[in-house]
Length: 426
Ligand SMILES: [Zn+2]
Image (cartoon, rainbow, N blue to C red; front, side, top):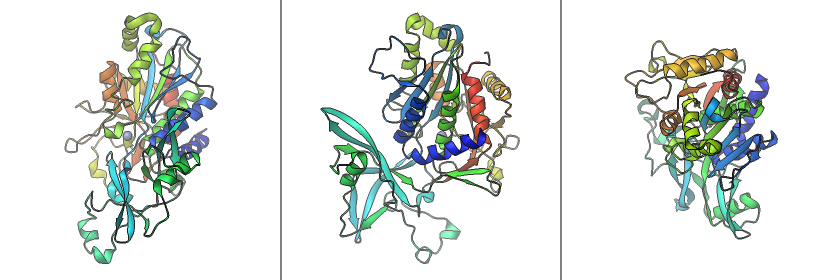
């Protein structure tokens, strides 16, 4: 099972070049396992035995209603995010400079920008068309390295190794698209990639991505090298967990959100009503009273990348809590509530992992290094629900090329299955 899960992960990482592609890939994986698509705009009078709900282009939930009503058993909820730091095309993105065509891009989230230089970059996103009277969004992917952020030569930047590589985020983050004169028409190319006709779409989003494929690495094949591991690795683990479980007594909900790297404040982000709406509709037969009783009996696991200790930067870690790659799922704790974990929810997840035969690690920040955050506290606050923040250990988080351990992936999937199946009582 472990080799298969990791192999599946590599394919998922390669195909999920934007949050929209990650959500579409999730939808197709779940559809193949019998999940029925239930639009938010339809009436939810009769619920399928397993179904998906989507909002926007990059947010999707999978639901398996339990044998007993939620107010008796609570929900078992598992959340992750489909987005990742990147560069995105500005409006009117193509301009001319020194005989070249270059792209205007905006910075999305918090990438380690220097890692985006000298990579072979492609463009993917969503194109908007009017088809048969309706506005429709079509994902597209140019699938070839059409542009590159080039570093200046060492000879023109002599201090780079002593002073570090520095750049201006507006003047120097301009990927080179080609030379003049040019025949390449970006809008037409996107139109062709979206549905083959070469007509410029009404509008489009454009996300740059590194075309290097995910791979197994390390002397013994113990690592995964890839872009977008934060947080597509946890999205994939959640999908692997939910697609295989049988309905239990409690209702299982997996929710993959867009917009985390931009603060979650969008109509489909973790700060939106998306998950609240689903839970309320699942409690329709018992009304708001049933919803409140359900929430009080529920537990949420928020899964996002965790910081493994770096062998050459070990001092960045707190002394007693140093997660290692392939050491098992990490439970994240923060006194300022930047993570949602409490003593109770930590104990709960440790029991899920233990039931799956998996050992956990813990992470806490040093007091002199500010802690990151996740969707866990946002959702826990919105829903008034107990939650625990967990994740697989990784290095180079927010680099264009990250790394994680192969052994952690199946362990996390097994712990997630124990959670979603509701076998651990609260
Ligand atoms: Zn993340």
